[in-house]
Length: 212
Image 1 (cartoon, rainbow, N blue to C red):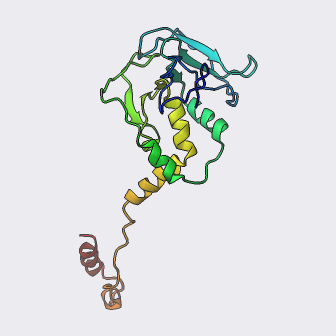
Image 2: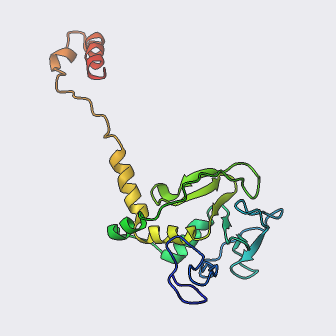
Image 3: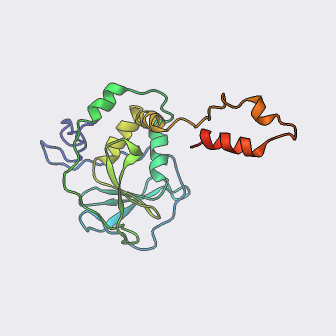
């Protein structure tokens, strides 16, 4: 990513140019249209308190509305909107670029932990590692959506493009315990085949040993 004003390379995870000081907007105009409604009331940025503007990224017939802070360029996305943006920008990612993922891990989040209030309902949001392994800690309100600091959407897109979701799924699968399969080799026919048919007492004693 380069600065819109001076074309200098932007630092990873940053939206402000370190050379000319310009805040650079994230390009969202290529997103697929998705019908969403106008917020019921004005939303204020949970990072700096400034009033957020509502942007329509498409036309009036097929709106795609998000909120953006004019001061710090933070974004507030309603539930599901980030998936639409990712899908339109990247399509289906089928490979893992492990070197790119390793490079993305070098970025360090701010050490100060701050819990923020949802711009919509004002309740405290949860801090969530997006995708379970991106390293991008976003503020999430289950009912109303995600707040992203400037630069975080770009980092999420880079992580997904490098196969981050696939890699996170691999890690999750490796942590899953294998399904329990009881060892029935000790179950002899004699324990089941009695003069009266199935001996439930013997079967119960055997199963208690298997499942203990």
